[in-house]
Length: 487
Image 1: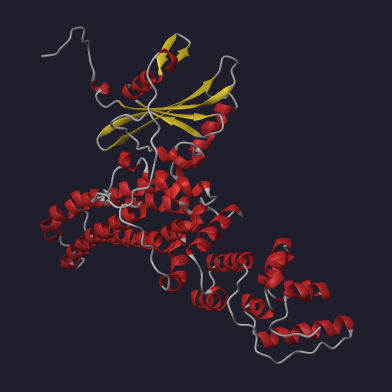
Image 2: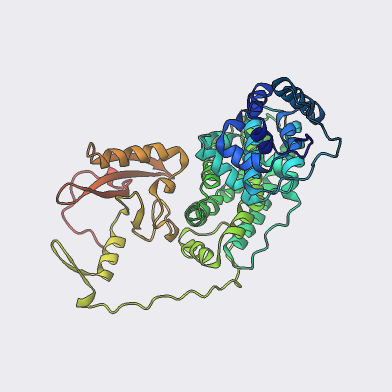
């Protein structure tokens, strides 16, 4: 065998198995070669030129050390070819994923960004948004916590920014869900620009009186900016569930966690502006605006291009259906994209349409009317943890849309609430608990949230019922009211 930058690591280890120990002792980065999966993927196609980059070793030095180790173990002289090392980017998809994950692991471990950028451009400079999404997904599947990926998400984007910037932005037709999302992004950029303009005029002054002069306008802009929640809710309830059905959930979880950070920061900003918390409010506003701008970039350079590549028109129809139930931020969808959706003909209401219940019979229409007129919001999760029903009341406390039907309930809550939801389901399923109560204060309302274990006549767990109710006025009741008080 001859050694060169083009020699495949897999061929080398097959010919000289003892070199495994050499590589592992040479650099901690080479411990990945112990993995059978890595050898079957990266090892099959990765030349020693790329292996040297991964280990941070000059190629000529690595080749000499390998030749010396072979000479020591076998007595054979292995020639080193003086030819140009292979320098093109890796093409094998599995290998690219493994090398990309290794770069991100090094990033998380504190390796200098400049070093990683050089390795990135030499090995995988033509990265796609879908590859980034799959990389995040695999890292989470392999045990890297979602909050750790979220923490360095901005650094990830910085690493890939030049490569992503070379790609064309998606251009969906007018009226398409992505077109609407991007139109909202242009609107939020305008609001962010207005807030930045006020902050520039304030010049980080600690003077409360100077800040007071701009407080009203700044407060009004923050209220407008808060409508971004509708943008995020449509992503979480309409787009993310469809992506999950295609096996992509990691980026959704990371983005949802960042959405929650932005929501919380908006609350802080609103309070600090109202209470004249100067200069604290300046830092909050700078963080808020930067977070929103960064999310716009991640959407339009990673999430949206990936979604355009992966989803078919039937998927986008599912995304589009139910968007009105959540609403839009600042704009209305344009006309143009009109997918052919056949609406099933309504069934005739009559005896044949009736459902026999334990204490009577109702038509399907009556069942739906009854459930949607209850003064509470209902959601039902079956024994497989899938959300199979929610009551589409006129003013739901917590937004739901058709995109969540069939989705795992754990995915219908923010990542930070996952462990609480899972604990409730586990305790209900085990028969240890039957009810879980919560109450919160939100937008001036007192909300009572209850979860009930649903069991059949034999005591078998069949699902969980969530009931949410605005009890603000109920808590104020005193005495009695026995007569009708209509005027």
